Image (cartoon, rainbow, N blue to C red; front, side):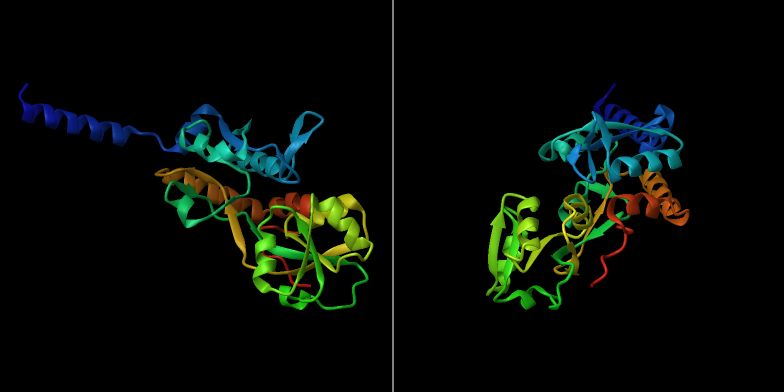
Length: 260
């Protein structure tokens, strides 16, 4: 075989393999399972309770798999390696609050967003003052967790007395006791942590920009993209998404938080 014929044969083989490459949807359907990766250490989204996975995203994954006509098969991974594992084909999707960013979209395709969140204030239930923005906290004491991005937000405003704490339990306790004027966390986590602490606190106004999270998967799987988006839309339409969401967050997390 001469070089020209060899090149032609190679090209035909490549085209044939490309044409025969299965869309992820076909692979999932044939296998009968949707391989889902999550951390398993991120309550209330996903965590282990009595040795079993639980949380909002665990229930969501099971519901999505059911809509696809398959079962969810879970793998846990540290956050630092979870997207690399997806790229390497270790699982089909990651359902773990993955923010939809331009950088990530260079490597992965995403479903439509299933959560929308923003930084949000936490205040006392009997708070009479109006804190609608971070600017309203100038000259006041704001509590937040050590090492969070919220500290940079508050510093950028200037004039806020920032108090940092090891975790939410500590600053929420100080807030309830009146030692600080407000606290700051992610809007999706606030109802859960307030409920867990049972302190006389409530969600305040959302501040900062919205962030949307979706389900990433390997690029060039258009049938899967259509199917996973339809499954999400169907869960919204039949009320099951709102039911699962309200169980964990007391609201529909696919919609932006409402200002107080």
